[in-house]
Image 1 (tube, one colour):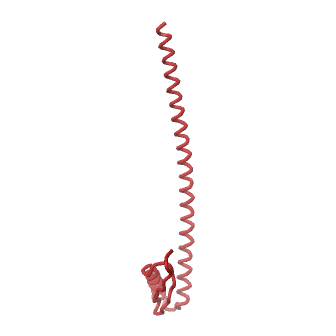
Image 2 (cartoon, helix red, strand yellow):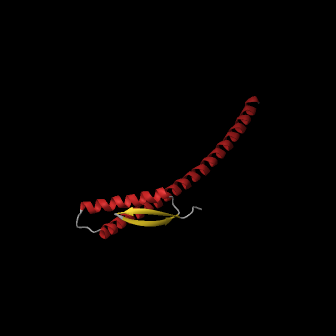
Image 3 (spheres, rainbow, N blue to C red):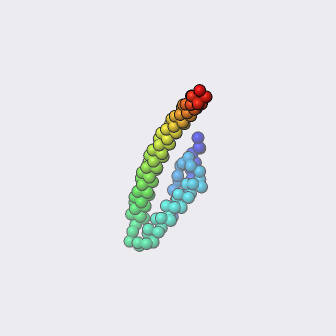
Amino acid sequence: MNKSAKVRVNIRGVDYTIVSDDNEEYILSIGNEIDKKLTQMIESNSKISTTTAAVLCALSYCDESRKSGENADNLRSQVKDYLEDSSRSRVEAEDARREIDRLKRELQTLRARLAELDER
């Protein structure tokens, strides 16, 4: 289990202390990403407040998170389907191998009988 650590991040000139089990580098990278996104939003529209930019940023990240989760669910479903298809194919291939072996034995038996008939 990871040890909780306090990490100080600066977003738009305000320091925030984050307590997390994640490593400091990761937390700082998230803080930097948020700071850059908020700065871009505010610089692109001087009338937008930091609070409004933060809400829009949160909405954007929430949207991305949900879509990523849905994509992950779809991929898991596809992988599950592929594994089931693969399993079915393996069973069918094994059945086919057994049938081939049975037919080979039957062919050998018939050839042996034919050879006996030819000898008479």
